[in-house]
Length: 153
Image (cartoon, rainbow, N blue to C red; front, side, top):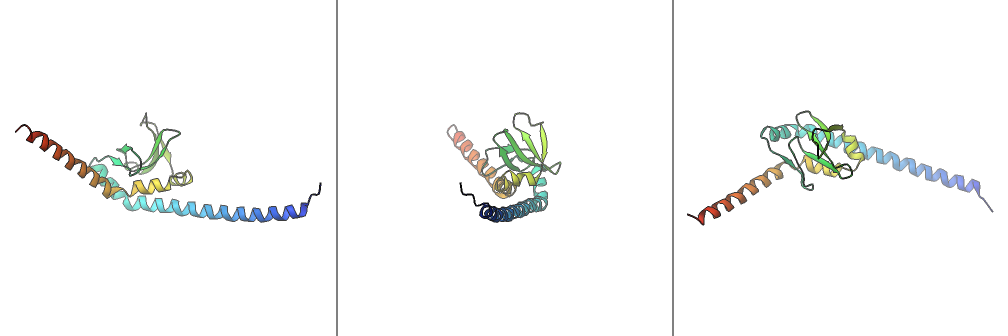
């Protein structure tokens, strides 16, 4: 067997440098995504509080879930838990769907690391569209009710 130990060590050292470089780039991007979420939450907090005071349920454009606590940031299918921004407590929580009293603090860093960045941004920014959807549903209900009533008048 002809082992070229020196060549292998050189190749491994090159691969190590690439690995280090890509790991640093990943860490940098995770930090940027984390910072973006933190900034977005702070910037839109008054809007979330407005929704909460008006007692609207928070919905999400891609997840078929509702939350009275605050914007929906993600859903962990394996654990059957929804990740929400609790507006009142001003913190992110992971909530077990079948027992919403079981709430665990969750961080924006974990959101990003676990792949929920896009879901979180979509949930945090779904504000105007969410209310438009409620209005649209009300208009549909109004039309249906008027039509039903007109049949008997």
